[in-house]
Image 1: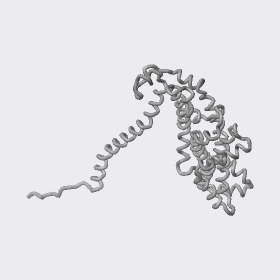
Image 2 (image 1 turned 135 degrees about the horizontal axis):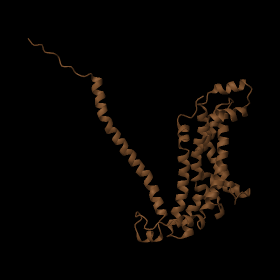
Image 3 (image 1 turned 90 degrees about the vertical axis):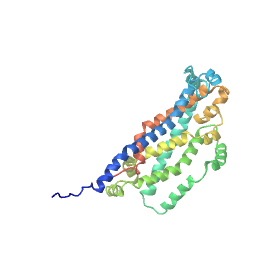
Image 4 (image 1 turned 180 degrees about the vertical axis):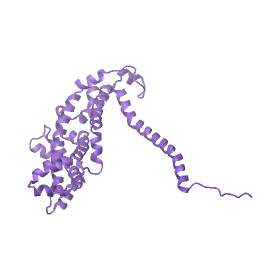
Length: 297
């Protein structure tokens, strides 16, 4: 006499796990396709810009815009540097950006420390006042600033750019630094106070090292804002000797004529790839600063 044995079925969680394993390669394939498309979208304009910078005039006149260069004209870079004065424009940009960035980071970090770590009456209202500065369009302040700089004799120098970049960059920097300081344990400052440390010592020796990644992140963001500015630099630079790189690129075609695109794109490449190299070099530090406000005690 035979006895029927019941069929054994796999547990439900095992079935779901097996189905998930079958779907996982498909999800990975779509992710790879999406990443490849993003790489093409980001890299192709840079590659096209570089290939355009080494084209000759004959390529521009007799071939398609999207065609490859028939002759690699490396002299475009030499012409952009010498005749196009791109070296002068880059120097002016550095002279305007570096002091502005240093002032913005120093005063922004100090204000963030005072607003978040120190306890005093009215600090919340003061933070709101700083935030109100973010809402003011830069176009509204150009005419009053131009009048002030003209009457004080600062016109014809790079000081209007430095002062304007510092003033417009402070509100966002103060807000971001105050946010980063929230992650710093207050017990460290209380212990430093018990040990007899003053405010300046706590700021320089305790707070700044702990938020260095945050300072680097905010500094890189502000650097790109200031470096890529066109409106302020175009308003306050009244001579070729004071032009920044963005204003210089705007007037590049006028210096070479309507058909000299090779030196123009060569100058653009020098500007774009230089800033891209800075970002790639500081990429890991920026990621650390962006993740979670920064620092643990």
